Image (cartoon, rainbow, N blue to C red; front, top):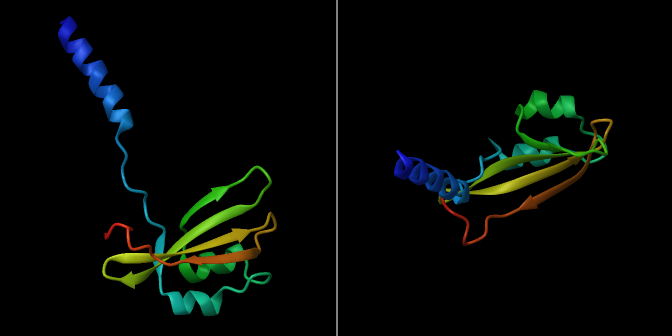
Length: 105
């Protein structure tokens, strides 16, 4: 029984070292996204109505970072990152094109 417990504990420890790919943000059309999102004007409610929910991070300050993605071809995606202020208005928007080393999905 003891070898089983030791083997099980080792498997749990090694399993904690394994990484899985990040979940993607919601995929949107980049041209539609660029036309619809205007920093300083677009609100959280407008984003949800136009593109739906996506991955986000809420900071203690009340700011939020939202991640959408656009198809960049060849199985790669462009990241579209938004910073929303505590009132829910988009303050900044960044686009990160895929790097040559990004994995294809």
